[in-house]
Image (cartoon, rainbow over the protein chains, first blue to last red):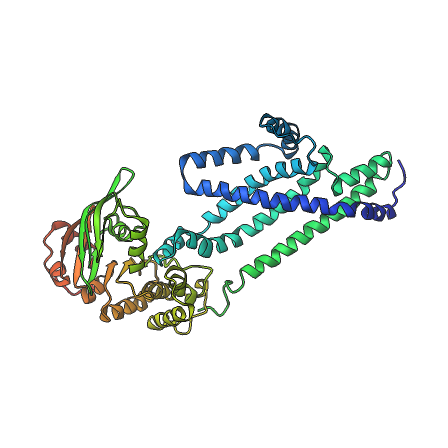
Length: 235
Length: 251
């Protein structure tokens, strides 16, 4: 084994960082799509119509039980086959499509649980009070319930986001050239040398990203709950 | 003004209301008494469709409908003419006291913001909370929260205000301030239907007391009739259990 060269960490950083945007872009797309599906699942769950609710619960159960790498490969090999049956050829599509699809499925199941627990944390009496005050169901939801749900869901959402980012590093296994993928390529080009330095560089990047996400969301949470903290001079 | 007939409501196999009639005229203060599980709260909740009764009709001024067949518009119109005060206050935790009151005016009733704020402040002044406009519910005591709840219910000047055990969740020393507000509302001529265990309030303020048990109205009358000369055995038993030495009517 070669001696450890700390300065190569910097080299690895400078070479992998340009690919960080791929990681971030894939993450953002996943969060948007996954959250939307998660909202639909939550809605189906809350409305208690038998069919919608059963579908949502089966979906959540099945996807939460699949390791992400297994689903990644199922989607990578299975999705083109499935779409081909409908006459759509995506064999030449970007790898990012498969990554986003996979992680949207996984993220949506997590989000469905996060949103549901947030919704259930709010006393149903507030909904009734809003209806009594003359608000419609929709007004009640987006004026009274949603702002409170958001605050409650935020810490779990942040956790899910950090997990998504870390699990997203598996995307290199199907050949996505994100920051992790670039690191793997570099190690390959060096014939397996300087692997430790490269992985340390990647660890630093993920560590900074996690820190950033947690800071941003902690600030957001503080902002959203302003004024609602129990003051010491309250009667 | 408000007339409900033959209300039936079940939860699963458990029949809660078995044909209840109630007639409310403008200015009436109707107090509903009864042991727990007798259907008092359910009756109140059926009136503004928080629960959907299976059977029965409601006539609210020019609105005539069955409970089962009521359209969304009917429900919305009835809700806008009624105020509801909850046992657990149910204030909007993300809104200040004033916003709690104005929300229904601005969003639900499309009243211009300035006018809504003026009326909201007026309602809060009336319940004695002029110095708590910008407090969040978590910063208020139980009694203050319930008074905000009352302000929210009266701000829209509803035709009838429904009170669902408004003092049951309060510490004993806070009950007085809420009852005081309710009494002054009654004096101003508000129409109220009150589910409560406060016998003193029923005796002082009500012009009709309704005793419910097992999902039906057992007996009704003026407070003096019902308290001093109850006819039905169930009423007598209930009053014996609930009335202590602080009550000076003889049974």
